[in-house]
Image 1 (cartoon, helix red, strand yellow):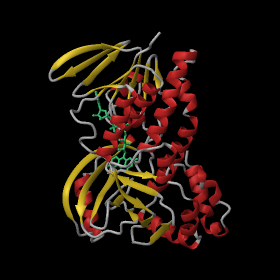
Image 2 (cartoon, helix red, strand yellow):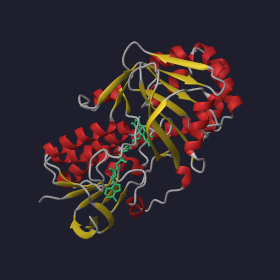
Image 3 (cartoon, helix red, strand yellow):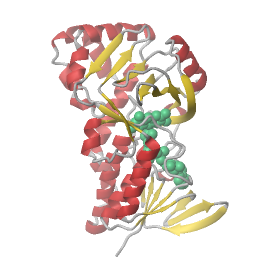
Length: 383
Ligand SMILES: Cc1cc2nc3c(=O)[nH]c(=O)nc-3n(C[C@H](O)[C@H](O)[C@H](O)COP(=O)(O)OP(=O)(O)OC[C@H]3O[C@@H](n4cnc5c(N)ncnc54)[C@H](O)[C@@H]3O)c2cc1C
């Protein structure tokens, strides 16, 4: 018998899931409260080249730039330069990327209902609102992929707190940029608990932004950042959103309801990037739902299969915690030690923006590591 799946939210997570379910002939409807997919845009659109390939993303309509490395600045401007001969990441237009995911999901047979907000769910019933009119729909399985401000997280019994998020402000700006490198700037003076970034789309256009702890005004912080770093640009557009910055939620299932994407904090706490991890999670969830329907495995098999992703996201959170506990003076010293220990060369060869477990343990075998042992101990002690 057909079991109907409803997905709440047509972002990258919800649309990837809908496509995968529809490709497996599982009837699926996605509800999206906005009238247009991908609008408003709330992303820098930076994704790793390695996982773009693994996940088979189609970037032909949304592609804007290829990145070969990162220049990372300490508070007093010590630079770590990580550089590769091969593409490390792609920058894409996130709205167009979501539109591609939408077309793929529709082509596979998913039904996508725009302009419809899900107000609540109870049992098999979904309460919707569209153009001021209430409605009721039925589903056997429901997936909350409703983003960082998820209303449905509570239904799974998860209460969020302000410290689970950072507040971001990002602009699109024209100026002079090095199109091969992203730039990251750390300082508690303008980006407490996070960092500021410049992500070039080409030589003359970039997405520039920062994240800071909730309670700090991100617009004021951003102006301070531009002034302190003497970055001179012409701002064309801006936006401000929350980014999850917490360990991933491990309880993802309650009865017939499941959590996915930013709603489940499937976001890298080191960078705020969520697309790769939430699409990988969507693929795992699609297989778990398929096996539940066809082989009667419990729905919470999803949580077990997520274990490798949980481990990576928890490691991201540990690195973030370590970084955010450093004072500016400590960070300045750390950058010098990392340089002396040959970490620029090491990270250029072994770094991975999605899966830190691929390089963290290898770091210990580096010849210059002795001076970093006290830091390694501090890091190891973080719970
Ligand atoms: C400034 C900024 C920069 C970022 N840069 C990057 C980056 O460079 N790379 C990267 O990988 N990630 C980046 N991210 C993170 C990335 O944008 C998110 O991780 C990703 O969008 C999460 O996808 P999602 O599908 O879970 O949620 P979303 O993309 O937020 O989609 C959720 C959807 O649900 C809809 N919705 C919400 N509530 C309801 C409801 N009740 N009923 C119906 N629909 C509803 C929303 O309208 C939305 O369309 C950035 C985030 C920010 C804020």
